[in-house]
Length: 461
Ligand code: GLY
Ligand code: MN
Image (cartoon, rainbow, N blue to C red):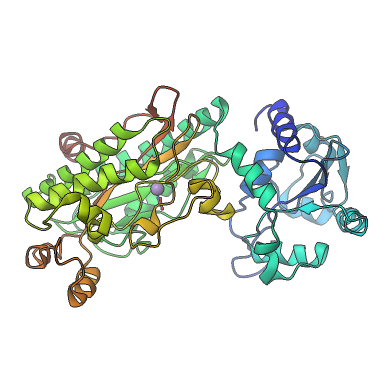
């Protein structure tokens, strides 16, 4: 937990953006895996953590802008709970650690909100992403679950995003801890992959390192020899000589800050010549994107810096053809790079995606619907304090090739005969995390081995 002053200052800054009303924050509940007493590992709502720091289930909070006060709602533990699950400090002493003096039983929440609504006061809340939270909004504010997202406060969304998008030094230090653990997860994966091993052995090792560091993985591990499937969560394949292995995994710290890295390495001791060719083009596109990072630069331009390098690389192999700028504008490169260059990262691996990419990554600006560009989560001009990922990839997706070829799509830019020669290649991606600074950008955490030489050296060890 950060010092109490951090939470007080965050709430004061939030309050200053409103003229009046109540700001309601519903913490998360335990979520059952298969029956009530067998829940998934608890994850607190990130915005609740940001303003109130308390990492336990069944809490809620109200910021009363008119009174200038904050209240935490929660019930003391029953003796049954203490016998089975252990004790915790009282709600009042937990709240005191985050500078909240007023605490009430959970049951008081309905009454306070009911009075506010009856008096015509605004009650601002964020869009819920869990069914339990939607049911609470129904019970507390009579908002139907299907209307909860549209009834959410755009003013509160903007206010929260305008704080959480700018990482403080203490947050950056937390993110760097997450990245350091994530680098260890990747080094272990790169070292251990061997023919005959199952993908799940590598995903298990990544998860072990994240847990042993006191946190957990920040998102389900992607550990696969089928890297052409962007978010492949199947880990049941056996590795063979000649396979490429794509590992996309990151840790979250006990305070909930994420790291997010991707490596692609050979299962054999070295990359094949074909693998080297594609991997080098992808790494050059990574370097092009990183070189473009600077305050004031739209991240859309960073995205296209990487896509341009990939398209030129594909042209050099005869897979793509034609005028590069026309091809990029038409979206032909998305055949091999169908996702965005990166996303904001913080307490959520895709930071605040629950509040809407439009607000977080586009500052309200319209988002493209073009295949590929529609998956760019962050396009707005970069500003000091933003933390984002850079993660270009090159993928040969047989099903996508077949669909586009059958439609004759982008025939002016894609040489399908050449492209089809790569249909069994799989995919490559490299990802690291960056802070935008006043001068440019700084990579967060330790260096992750990623050149061909660095990775092959680890494969020998
Ligand atoms: N690391 C998974 C993602 O960025 O979507
Ligand atoms: Mn990512």
